[in-house]
Image (cartoon, rainbow, N blue to C red; front, side):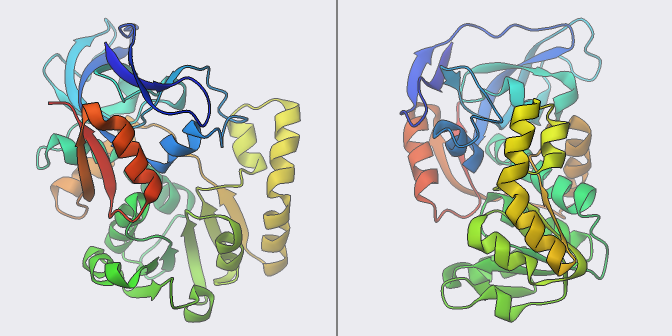
Length: 331
């Protein structure tokens, strides 16, 4: 089976002949037709998360898939051979830059009928991230105010649409060239990050979704009302994440130290900071599917590359400046 893997951190993506996936009793074997690329793939490649995601190398990258079911385990009830599906494999079973993958039944959903494979392959990780940030963790309500950073990117472009569907006032940061684009997605307030300081433009917000980290995260704390919350997807990880991930005592102490500074700043301001590392969920994808089918959310695909050009596609992602997602297709 053809696949693309790394043999060392910070190493290049190489094509390999990988063994065929093993299909467990509750697994679904999928012939991959499209695989979205995510910033997470690049972070894994350079080893940024190797302490909390200790993958064994060589490692096939890829966290998004859309494709067709070609086999099912004996305990699978929700899918049959021939079904078109999409999903994000569990973090322990990534590897969608391949011709086939075995995925737990619980992590898949039927592909929305109103979109093509490339669009479906762009959605799972970013849509689940937006859902878990805004709906599950952020509990965003109608009439509240949310700031979504990097609104033209993969997560941001979906989060704006979801927040608008939930009835929130949505502010976002984007380049001037993408201002009209993010307004079309539903942004009420657009802040040009190149010429404006978002900290001076918005205040009293209920929620911030931060995908950038660093100084951007620190400034985001200061645009919240008391009791508001920043959800960060770029880190640093926090103790709640460490506990949920089942990290050992030493790693838990290390994680607590990494986020101690930002958590202290948040406490002084009367706000909270939470790190989100999205989890696979077929049930949540089915909720998202309903929003896609009724037109509340549309996928945003900035570039499509053939499967053979996986390394080139990852390089394009690293350079940035792409609206929405980069997707590999394997017709």
